[in-house]
Every structure is written in structure tokens, then in C-alpha cells.
Amino acid sequence: MFQLVRTSALTRTLQHFTKTSLSGAACAARSSGALTSSFSTTASTHERYTLPDLPYDYNVIQALEPIISAEIMEVHHKKHHQAYVNGLIVAEEKYQQALHEKDVATQIALQPALKFNGGGHINHSLFWQNLAPTKLGGGEPPKGALLSEIKKEFGTLEDFITKFNTTTAAIQGSGWGWLGYNKAAKRIEIVTLPNQDPLTTCIPLLGVDVWEHAYYLQYKNARPEYLKKIWDVINWKAVAERFAKAQQAQ
Ligand SMILES: [Fe+2]
Image (tube, rainbow, N blue to C red; front, side, top):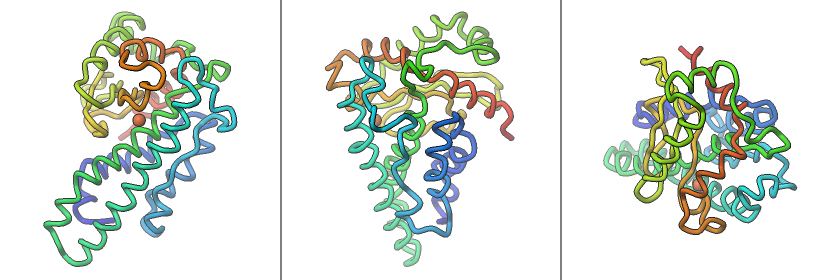
């Protein structure tokens, strides 16, 4: 793609995301095409970055109610995520022009926009897969290897959720709480990041958006209440699939 982008952590995350994050049966079938094509080096920028479908029927967007309202889901997906996609397209087109003109100063100046919008696209694409309606398994506790790993690191599932929620609720301003797999240490970790910074120190397994646009229409300023409820629609099966792939990743 571009010299600076190619060497950035963001790009490594974009590349890694296409390899490891699209697990989940239904969602992979519906989303992987758009996201895989998103990083083709031959397609146009508009073709590379597109809003992925939700991994559940868009006609029943209220599927996550009462935990997350249909209004939040629609605005979050159609407006906010789309805005990150649009911003990424604009930033990358400017970057292409700057690269063509060998304008290094502009290439450097565009890095924050690429990070913010690229991170927003990566994070939200994963977030939709982290969620599932109850009738599709949302909220069903993890089992097997993932549950064993959680117990090894945190004691019990409840202890993990308490620590995750406490840590994530404490983010100042907007950001994300993550469960990631640290390949070097071969263990799972809780990480928080501000803004739309993508998780690059670990392989992302589960991300929870705590920007106000993710909950304010329903939960107002009660971020801890949103965090308490969201576990009822977490798609642990998809998280477990990502965990298995992360352990095998080179
Ligand atoms: Fe968001």
C-alpha cells in the first residue's frame, strides 16, 4: 500500500485483523467478503473499506434488546461506524496523493486520521461480532479452553467480568475495554485503550465500546450499568474461536 502505512502498527493490525478476527460462523459468512476485499491492494479505496453487515439479521436489529436498544444499534452501525469508514477512505486518498507527490510532511500529518478512522473501522467490525442475540447464543458462558484460561488468569468468570468492568468503566473519556491474547507471554490480558486506538499489543479477542454513543441513549451516564448488562449479549462462542486461532497464530 504505502510506505509509512505499511510499516505502522495500524497496518499490521489491519492485516492481522483480516487473518484472525473473522471467526464466527454466520458473521464470517456475511462479513469476511467485505473486510477481506477491504485490504486488497488492487481495489480502489472505496472498494477496500466498506461498512460490514451486522452478523445478525439487519431486519431484526432489535435482536439485542433489551440490553442494547434498536435505536442505539442502528445509529451506532449506520452512522458512527459508517463515519469511520468514510474518514478512512478520505485519509487514505489524501495519503496516496501525498505519497505520489513525495510529500513526507503530509504523510506524517495524516497518521492520526488513519489511526483514528482505521482503528474505528477495525474496532467496530470486531464489536459487532462480539455481540449476539440471546436466541443465537448471546450471553451463554464460555466453555472449554477459553473458560480454563479465564479461570487460570482471573479465578472465576465472575471475577474476570468484575475486573474487566471495573477497569473499563474507569476509562477517562472515550475508549475501549479489551480481552486480548498476549502471544509472547501466552496468556490472556485485560487492556484498555483511549479513543479508537486499535489493540496492537495483543491479539484482540473481545472488545467493548465505551464511547457514549454506544450506550448513552439508553443508559445515559450510567456506564457501569451498561457494562453490567452487556454480558447478556456477549457472543462467547465467537470469542472462543478467536482465542483458538490466536493460540495457533505465528
Ligand atoms: Fe462505537
